[in-house]
Each structure stands twice: as structure tokens, then as C-alpha cells.
Image 1: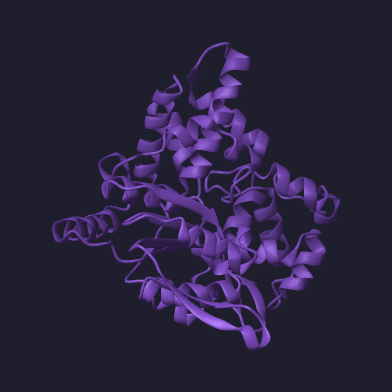
Image 2: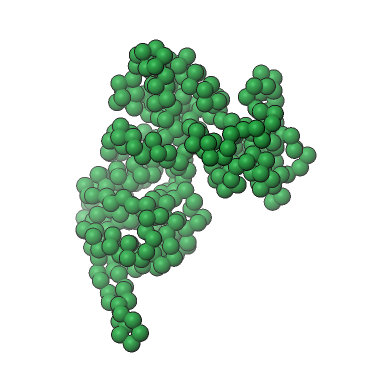
Length: 351
């Protein structure tokens, strides 16, 4: 068996694995600097592929707000990374014909950071906070009256000179995005009038996204190659576009052209050790370890130690997709390989 290593401890260091993992749905440094992807984001709902029910629901809320000439309700978007939460927030702003200020919750370290943002907002503007579950308790406390009554209750001075001051804010819409809905406190979550989940994309929708982006970057890709990329992109557009760009690199270096064929795609996937279901070497090492210890549940810390990986990374990045595919299950005693997981491992042993 060539793909699943019999000695999982001989793999690369944890740091190098994370850097080389192309199927990671979180943003990589190359994604942040990719001007093509950023500048070519869909700007309106009719350009956005997938999430039809979500788009329909948001469009009704937006049209109703415009009809009443009122501010849109606060929106909470949650789901796995790379599914389009930021893009949807920007689309909502465009549909409302207003501006959108984008900030990551991790950069709001002090209460005055959020106060400055709120004071800088104008009527009907949108404030988008990514990874909103990472807000500090003090920042959340400041947000409560701002979201509910559009005002800031500030304490000025110290000791006997302390006094309270209320500042009225222009009406605005907060759009929060999170990958961990359960980590958001109930008081904050309850202040969102619209709460929507983003699901994984179908291969058909991913194939359309791949075709659209290939046209934008002047790449010709055939139907077989685009479908192959879509099927192994783990239902995530960010991964699909990342694989397409790798395929473009291969076609330009090997074939000296901008034509992506199924042969080029297979070379990319083989080089990255990604199979037909989008699983890479780390996923298979995880499954292989459970396969070897399938006499009972295995604790996450034991798996992390065996794979020389961080347990948090395994829990929030590797496991969710394996669970969705039905290859593993979580129990109170640990992780176990399902019959489907055993079949998957046996298929590779037969190769």
C-alpha cells in the first residue's frame, strides 16, 4: 500500500504538514494575497453560486428593509471556513446600496477598539465581524446596547469623578461570521434577528465556480477535469480554487499552455496525495491509526501524540470532514472507525 504509511511517526513535522496541506479550508497566506480571488468575488446575489435558500431568505429581508426604508436586522452567518461568509456580507452591503466595514474579532483586543468602530459608522452602514466568537467579554458587553438600542453606555472618569455617558449611534447592521456557533454567548447570539447556516457545496455548484474562475484567469479546463477537482474539494470553493491554481501552474510549466486537462489534474492530486474524496495524507494517517487500534475507542490526545499533531487541529480541522463522510464517529470514550471507514482503508490496502 503506497498511500497509507505503515509508520505514521516517520511523517513530516507538524509545522510542515500544516503549511503544505492544500485541502485546509482555513485561509492560507497565499489566499490573503491573491488579488484575483479578492477582486473577482461575486458582488450581487445573481452572481453568487449555491446556497439558493439562504440567498432567497436574505433577499426577502433586504427587499423588505428597502421597502420600509429601515435598517436591516443583524445577521449571524455560521459554517465551516471557506464557504463564502465574507463574500455574502459584502453582497448584502451591495444589495442594500451601502458600505461594509470588515474587521476580524481577534483585532478588537481592547474595548476602545470596538467603540471607535461603532462611532465611525454612518446611517445604515454594515459592520462585518469575522470569527465573532473570539470577541472578549468586555467587547460583548459594549455591543449589547449598541445592537439593541443603537447607543453606547460609557463610564468616564475614576473614583468619585466617575460618571456615565450615553452616546446615540446611527442605525447600522452587524453581520457576524463564525465557525463555532456554540462558542458565542447566548446574550450575543439572541441579538441577531437573522441566523443562517452555510452548508457544503454540491459538486455541481463547485464545478460552476471552477468554470467561472477559470474564465477570469484565462484558463481553459475541460468538463472531466473540472468535475474531478470539484469532487475532491471537500465541498469548499476555497479549496476548489486553490486546486485550480495549482493545476494552472502545472499546465504552464509542463505543457507550456493554459489548458487544464484531466491528466494535469491527476498529476496535481497525486503530488499533493489527495484522493477521489478529497482526503490527504493527514486524513489517511488518522484513519489508519484508528484501523490499527480498532479494538475500541481511541482518545484524541493519543491520536495526536501518535501523529505528532496538535489535538485542536485534529478536532476542528481533520475530524469534521471525516465525520461528515461517515468514516469515523465520536463517542464519550473516544474516536472509533465506522464500517465505511474500514472499507475505505481496505480499498487502499488493495491498491
